[in-house]
Image (cartoon, rainbow, N blue to C red; front, side, top):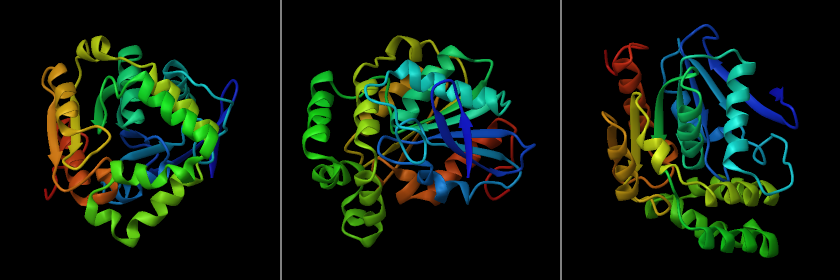
Length: 267
């Protein structure tokens, strides 16, 4: 296990692949840890430098008291890259991780050469919706919410299989302060103006069965970024990297090949 100490907290991270290869950095969703990307990382070319980290309040990273701001989450990502001396990376973010990617790209283009914005949007939900969830976390706990979260996250066939159980458990064991803190950050974020000003290569991925960030919302974001490539993964929900890792990895590898970082899939 690797840990990076920042000014006020430590963040758990992991590196795979070639430490001297082109860097690809992954940021996970609310209520998950860096294992979210296991299936995709295993399917990517071995010469890449693949970096994952647990955002604050999640996984094995420190959990400061809630609330958090999106600015703090973006600064954490920025600090991870600077500590690891990463420049010119492809930043892959899913859900809140995709919001972090949008904020980081707007702030530090010197660190980012391209983004993959997966199952995310410049603005997700309303303050009122997120406050209801925060209140429920604080009064009833995540176990009371996990079934509903699984319904938003996964397609019906996946939910009805045993494959859903580790993900349900992952949500239930997320620190309540971490979940509530990041929920507050999402509630306060509206990146429509800044994301619409982005001018860099972008791959945007949606899942047809996504109950958290529906495909129309994700596609609307793709249309804000000139030249963005939009891919819809049919039959998958909010976490297509879990439900369809082969398809997800193929889209990501094809995007990386277009940047000259690897061979095209099947090539």
